[in-house]
Structure formats: C-alpha cells, structure tokens
Image (cartoon, rainbow, N blue to C red; front, side, top):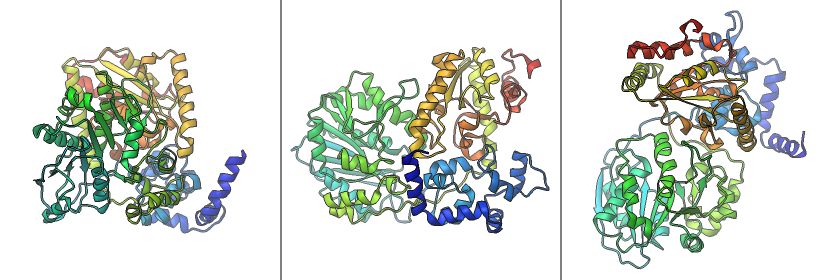
Length: 579
C-alpha cells in the first residue's frame, strides 16, 4: 500500500472512529443488533432479496445481506440500491460499512438521499402569488444587463439572493429577476432600487425558462440596444465572494464572444461536448445583436426535468453558439474542476466569485471550514449566513412500482410508433467492458438491423468515490479501446465522463431503448422502477450473472423482438431459433 493511501486510511480512522468501531463490531463480533436493524428497516425486503440472490428460505436473508452486500445484484429491496447510495455518499463508501446499515444508523437521521432520482413536487405556501412588477427605469452607466433566474418554495426572497443582487448591481444597469415560483406580494418591496423587472410565474423549465423570459422582456423594452454585455445567472450559487468586476476585468483581456466561470470537458461526440456551466454566462455585443440567443430560447417549450435541462439545454447551448462561429472561454481554465466537488480550489486558487449551494449540502473532501473563512474574509455579510451542513434539505418520494409499470406499455408503444413511421430506433447499451457484456448478443443482432441506431457506452467504475474518478475514467477509456480492437465501429462507442454518473447519464437522453449490462455498469442502472420513472426510453436489463453465451436466453433479449413485432406487425428478421 502506498504512503498516501496509508495516511488517508489513518486520517479516516481518526475522524470516523465511531463508524470504524461499528465496522469492527459488524465483522468480528457475534452481536445480533445489526441483523435486527436490517430486519426492522422498511427498505429491506427479504423475499425480494431471496429472489434476486437465489438463497434458500432456510438461510437468514438479513445476515446474508450483511455479509454479501458488495456482490453485484445483492440489493436489499427495489427501493434501495447499495451502489447508488455509496456513489452519493463517499464517506460511507470509504468506511466500508454495509450501506443500508449505515443509512439506518446514521444516514436516515442526517437526511441522506437514498437515490439521486428521488423527486417530489414543491409545496408552496398559501398567500404566495404569481405576479410581476416593473420598477423605475435605470440609467446606462455600465452598459450591462442581467437576467437572474431563481427558485425558492417558501414565497420569501432569501437574504443570500438579495446579497447576490446587490453584488450584481455594482456593475449592471438593468437586472431582470425571474422566479419559477410564487412570491408573497409584500416581498416585492425589497427589490425596489435593485431590479428593473420582477416576474414570478410557474414555467417548470428551470434556469433556461427564466433566461428566456428575462431576455424577452429586455428585447421588448429595447433595453439591449444600449447593452454591451448580457449576463445570465441563477441562484444555485452563493456570492459574490469577490467583487464581480474583478472577474470581468480579467476576462476583458481574453478574446472571446461569450464566457462563464467554469465548464466541463467532454469527448466531442454527438452526445457530449465541452460546455460552460449554465449558472453563469456573459454574452458580448456581437452575440446579443446576432439574434442567436433568441433562436435558441425559441427551442424551450413545455416542461422539463433536471436531466432534460442538462441533456438538451445546458450541454447544447455552448455548442449552439460555437457552431455559429462564436468563441468562448472560462475564468477557470481547468475544466476538470467542478464547482460542487472543488469549491475551495475554485474560490481560493482561481478566485471564482460564486460557489454552488450544493457544495454545502454534500460530504466534501475539500476543507469546507477553510472555504467559509475565505468567504467571511471577503464578504462578511454573506459569510454570517452560511454554514456547512451536509444534509439534503428536501423530503423525497420514491416512484411506486405501480407508477413505473403503468408506463412500460406506453414506452413500448412509442418505440413501435417510430418503427411504423420508418424512423430509426436509438438503442444505447451501458456496459463496463467487452469481457463483461452479457448484452453482446443483443447488441450484435441490433447492429445488423437497419431499423436500429445502436451505440455502446463504457461506464467507469466509480465505486471507490470521488478520488477514483480519473483512474476509473482512464480505465474505462482503455476498455473502450478494447471494444474498438474487437471490431466494434468506433462511431458506435460513446465515452462517458465521471461527473455524469451520479445521476442518469446524459448519453441516454434521446435514446428509445436503453439496455443495462455488467457489474461495472453499476447496479444503479438496473431495471428497477425508481430508475426509469419519468424517463422516455424503454429500459431493459440483461443481468450480470449470465455469461455472454447465456445472454441470448434472457427474457430481455426476447422482449425486444416480441413486443415490437407484436405492435408493428412485422419482425426484423432475427434468427428466432437462437432465441
């Protein structure tokens, strides 16, 4: 073991002595308290566990789970995925504790998420209204305008939002505040002298829906005619830590047409592009006058979930402008850094003036107390309001099994309709490597059929936490190269980045069918109700306890060829004898 790993283990043991004690008790003592904790958990389903692991009725399911939870497919119930829980909470992954036991002993009380797809509709208070108010005209001194997108469920303007607005006001003439939520009418008085226009309406299109409405107001009032720089910013961040003008002065030295604070670096494929993070954009005069912003905003129709917003808007926006000849840049050139996972580095080293709120809600490996000290030293008013409390502030609801099952026939019908119209059916396979690819037979069969547009994504193994992201990515790239060496068309191989794997990968955003494969494709991608609820694609699972030769006998392989010809009235010509 390397010196760094040894020091890391010692550091963890010193800071997590209670969890370490529990780990020792669990593995070396005969105490039955942990077994009883598992049995009492509403997230443990003994019948489900026996069905999926194949253990007999005579075996103790709770004890078996305590000892074998790390094996693929050994989840305690449909409502709890061990690997996903560990990917959400790196401190639990490092500890080595059984994930469900850790949740019942510590996580439940701390409010830990058990799934990144848990959702709930916001409950707004009685008396909060959807309203708008236009304030007095502003003078054109700075020749900058800003659209600030916000959301808060309690109907009251947060103090941190007012601090952000005042920080903007130091370098912006016109601020348009657009909220995707109702507001108590009395709160509007707090905005006097700060904003030009405030609009609170329920559009359910996230920050881009607010940007769209703010831009429309500025165009209607002719306020962009005297504007040299337009800012899009949302309230997912605290700030400004440093004066925003400092960042603008630094970026004035950079030849570009639009810029942001941070971005993401992705393989330039048809799915993933390099893009600016959507919480902060600055567009210069040539972009404003081109009409391209209005053209992109016209795309935004209907309602979105978070994944749609990322997959269809945030990741596409930068490329949309880049394809039209505009150059872009970021204040922090290191696109490997993330504003959620590297807040101290971005603020202290690169002087990024905003920090993501989510950084204060997650277990971090960076020193959050040091970050708070930096904030208090440069913006004492903001610093007094912030504290590091890594507890998710929401209550969540898991989609029911019935809710998921009701959607399956609808999803199959949508795929069948595309077949009837002669449209390509997008199929994405998620796998860890060609060696552990039980869906290989199905992949090869689909690849031979012109009706299918088939791709395979190699999933990095992120079970060791944040520190393992880059090594896992390198290993996944090597596996992708092996796929190509084994004869897979490189155009069919999609590379995924670590920061996309905490939630549904964007690689599935516009897929019609998604097939999950292998242990390294992560059990969080299994065919369970909570993972497919709310998604448009038809999910299939090829279980990883089958060898590739056995995969052709799986129901998942049969399902594609049964459900589609049944609805379409024809068969794609696959050799039925092999099925």
